[in-house]
Length: 136
Ligand SMILES: Nc1ncnc2c1ncn2[C@@H]1O[C@H](COP(=O)(O)OP(=O)(O)OP(=O)(O)O)[C@@H](O)[C@H]1O
Ligand SMILES: [Mg+2]
Image (cartoon, rainbow, N blue to C red; front, top):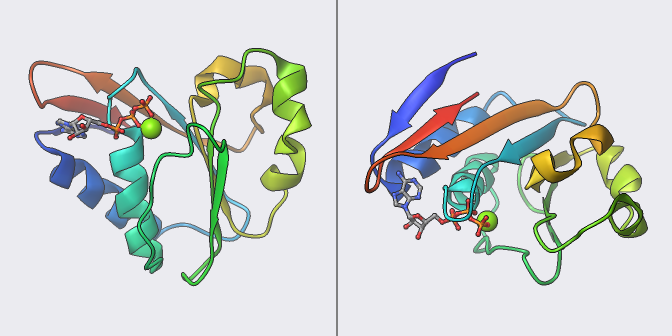
């Protein structure tokens, strides 16, 4: 478990970019942290690190975005707007979790029980101003 202080969105993206190098087929990343904590910034960097060229935006309304073209496919899920487990299963979470790419889930802590045992948790905490504590 490593805790890092990020001082800017760029630093948070850089962390995502670095983590991308260690990702393997089937990995699940469970992101937790409040609104504006930096989960999507981190995901942008991670996607760039995988070699995804398209712009990564928050799937808050569409719930799921899929990005091909990188070293591994990336599935980006945001559970913020969902309220119960049936809805989450209804979007096909289990199939995404079994994908042979990388599945990254924002607001994973809302549905901790649905996350696979092997998920890698990344927790974001807002400190003062632009500071964020990121725990891997
Ligand atoms: N150190 C930092 N790391 C990341 N974002 C930062 C940092 N400092 C300031 N910010 C700002 O905080 C916001 C983080 O937004 P982001 O969309 O990444 O959050 P989020 O955790 O995905 O929120 P949501 O729960 O709404 O999806 C951005 O506006 C970004 O510019
Ligand atoms: Mg987000």
